[in-house]
Amino acid sequence: MRIAILAMAEFIALSAGLLADANDKLVGTWKLVSATSTTPNGERNETPYGTGPAGFLTYFDNGRVTAIISYGGRKPLSVGGGVLKVQEEQAEAFKTFLAYSGRYTLNGDKVTHHIEISSIQNYVDKDMVRTVKFEGDRVTLITPPAPVNGKIQTVELVWQRLPTGS
Image: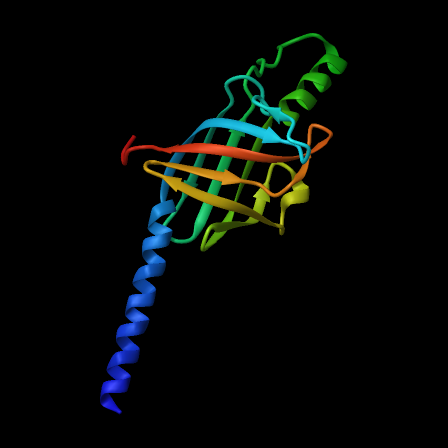
């Protein structure tokens, strides 16, 4: 009986260690390197977020995630110009920026972001599932097919791990 309990304890410790190792692969801050999208018929878009988008993705060791993506080519808001111009600029600024935060779980080659707050209210209390591929100090997240700019597309985001303390 004692051997069985010890074996079970060792198995649980090993399992917890394996889970921690898997999560450790994600923990840290990642900088967006590239974004591409593909339609179901193979049409590829190299700039779904404009030319030169910027972004940061941070996975914390307590199971939390924060993501920020800014489309490339965003313009600063003008100071004057009237109410209509300001509203148009604000709408464009909103349309070209995404931020959210929540918890995450990693299960095999899938990471699920459990959204708690987002610049797009429709994402709150939703789960965003991404396929994860690790290659050295890069991670690629691939979305399931979803509407992007009016077309059903799969988006592939490549992130580069930032060194600790940078």
